[in-house]
Image (cartoon, rainbow, N blue to C red):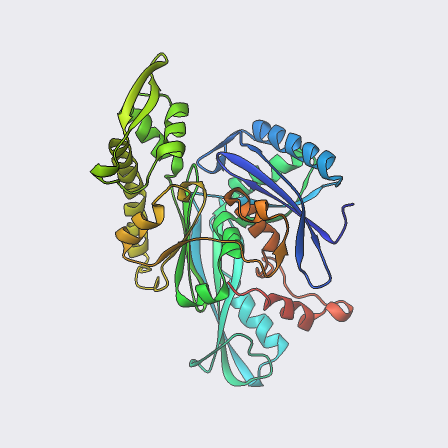
Amino acid sequence: MAGNHFVASIDIGTEKIALLVAEKDDDDHLRIIGHNVCPSKGVRRGSIFSIDSLSRQITKLIEQTQESFGVDLALFRVNISDTHLTCIDGKGKVPVNEFVSAEDLESVLESAMAISTPTNKEKLHIIKKKFTINESVVVDNPMDMEAQVLESKVHIVTVSSSSVRNVENCLKQSNLEVDKIVLNSIAKSQAVLSQEEKNGGICLLDIGAGVTSYSVFQEEGIVHSGIIKMGGDEITQEIAYAFDTSLEEAKRIKESHGYAKSISQSDDQFIDFTQGSKEQHQLSSLDLSEVIEEAYLEIFQALKNELRHHNLDTIIKSGFVLCGGGCEMKSIEELVRGYFSKRVKKGKIQRSRISGLETILTDYKYAGSIGLLLHEGDLNKAKFIVSNGGHGVMGKLKKAFVGNF
């Protein structure tokens, strides 16, 4: 069943691995035809620490999916979450002889991409932003426009080479081939953000189990991406410490009774839980909500510091869109809204390019996998110009302009 019209993705997280298979029609619309999810192993804080453990989980997941849905899978899009990622804006500038040609576009983009990286890092994404003509007019596609000077800007995301090799080796050990490796937050932006939201200045906030990632967008595209080394696991650990219970019991309490924002005294009630050697105890739901809120605020303080450090806080005029398991907590929108004094909403899958079971399209566990299926827009990191037949300079450049983050 597999072929050129099928796309598969694996979203590797600290807590779960989600797999999707989609069929692509002639209009590039995707229809999800296979899905599966399983617990993750060999991943800590979003990074792979045991290729063997993770590879075994992926192999088992794929075998189950192939058997259940009758597909034969080998080529995958996969995500990456690297706490050592960096973001750089590359700029290019070339003179133009009257009208912008394909050669001018090639030169200016090559110039913008020509940024050296440390030996232990590599360019994961090179995302086209805008072009500027004569140092004043900003356009999406300057082809055939009259100009004396053409400038370009690209957004370059670099990650550690070891993180990339770990992902590749993990899939290779499962006898799979990597189609694309995509930064987790960029993939999810494809799934839950509209172009209108990106244009208005917005921050996608993804609170996962191991890390919290964020990406800021405004009209010219992606502005910055970053990762904070805290996530939902920190919330669980704080609960376990505060009430002297196991991580497993703390997670159960969090998911069953937790509120991100402290509840009022009038809403207080007692919650049964086990402590130590299975001794039954009770705790106050008010006390629980205070512990949870304090843990979330530590994450948000780190995020606020990052945004201020990169001068991004004034760009976020349209507020925050939330995704990830850590944003499934009750009253999380209220807490983020109050802390940042911005508009806040939960992310929902953009349905214009993808369809499938409603239970999949509304399940936060699959948002990353959906984003991987939808991902497009990178400029080729090696050489984006080819010269054969109808797929020459113009054809390839046209494709480069399709995705504008």
